[in-house]
Length: 390
Image (cartoon, rainbow, N blue to C red; front, side):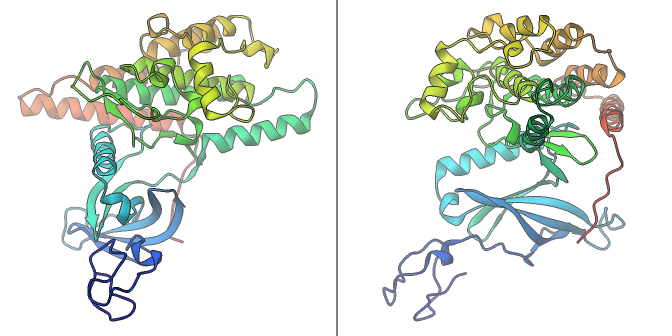
């Protein structure tokens, strides 16, 4: 517990004024109790915090290492890296923020998918809520796109403006696999964008940040965002999301199509570099996106038709599912139907099936899903990935 800087009286977390001597406490006293070197005992093992990965207004993300308890079921496993997302104490006291954080943890707990960041644990530490999840050794898709754009500019006239078609499809199909399973379980991500797509050093893609994800209204009743600005990022939001209308998976597919567009063109259809957040959202509702071939003249003509459907203002005119959209782009671009792409569809088909009461049948089903997940990772991995404590 924190103590008063003047009289050393024990204070409640988040207290700005000491109740005994009335001394004002520094803001540093309100920061997260987790820091480099902190050891978090979870019973089955300990997380030792290693370094800060990033931070935002609501929290901080740390890298830690899980050391399993001797004598436990995983005692013989080596230390493994983990990302720990910690809400700041003041943010943890807000019911709405806590609810969003609980929802993110619940979504990750239910989404066991090779292209979704894995769930590790959810717990309270001092005044803060903390979510431990899979550590992804790599970078955001946003950084990958920016690097390709920079290379294209150096290459000069005639070069592709960003990523090659096959590499874009390689990342895009993994994102679609994640969304297919997410939607099959009834979740809508609501914030699909390049900075929320992580690319591991071995080429495997991971969808992350389910902080504003919610259940599809058709699966479970949820409250609609009724006042203030709708949550999301303007350059990637669907028209119905901007308007705070009911959402389903087609909203995420609209956002995913924008991510694919940006991988090819080097910028989203409505560029945030040129417009305010308000104008970006207005464009999503009212303005037709520029044809991708105006930015990528090397693209086949069918690509304009595919993006026109994927980015239709009316969700009824878009592709119904992530797999349907992927199939349309794959065949339109003349790309092979690979076993790993077929496995993505199979995982999505099996994910929502009710678990049978018969335990042997349940075990067989889970073993099949585990085999599919391993197969998908093995097929998309380009180089071996090893992570060691630093």
